Image (cartoon, rainbow, N blue to C red; front, top):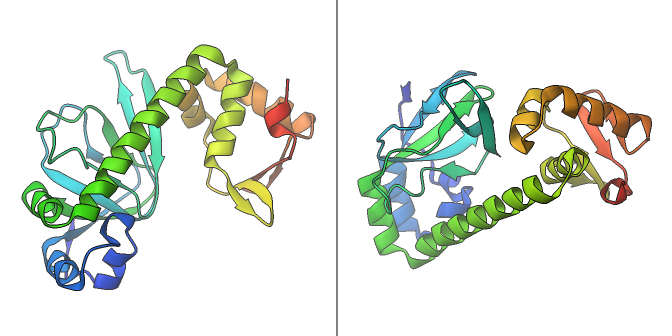
Length: 224
């Protein structure tokens, strides 16, 4: 549901997309965005929807996915705080090509297409940031297509773990909750195969699971 605003300028400044906006534009934007909360499992947008808003993640995690009529799903990406989706709205008025679902309770900021276009027309750096995001996502899609074609399941699992990890005390650590079914949908494999690979990586000492965290060893990228 929509939450009463105003949204603080400090909150907006933390979002990379708005980081370069001058103070007057940021103040105006703070009065235009709506803050909305969604429970875990909510579908924020569905493939085929015709929507006209940009969404910015304040808290929580979401998954971007596509599916077919038989119920098969592929997860295209995971989104977290300070990331955004719907940036193609001012460029392409076509229906949404993917669905976005909340993996946990989420707070989002919503900006209408009209106001988003106005911001882009008045701020070159913001426009360049959106273009860089689109290029980055295109390159990421190319990389994933290449991985699916050229790598076995071991390579895909390792690549995904590296992608999801962050460096803590000079070590790669996956701190976010990892659901094997979601991993399988991200790399085009079965849940059973992902479970076998993860178990084998543990037995070989390549990963170590401590509570909800997964620690990756230095030799993870050289496994055969």
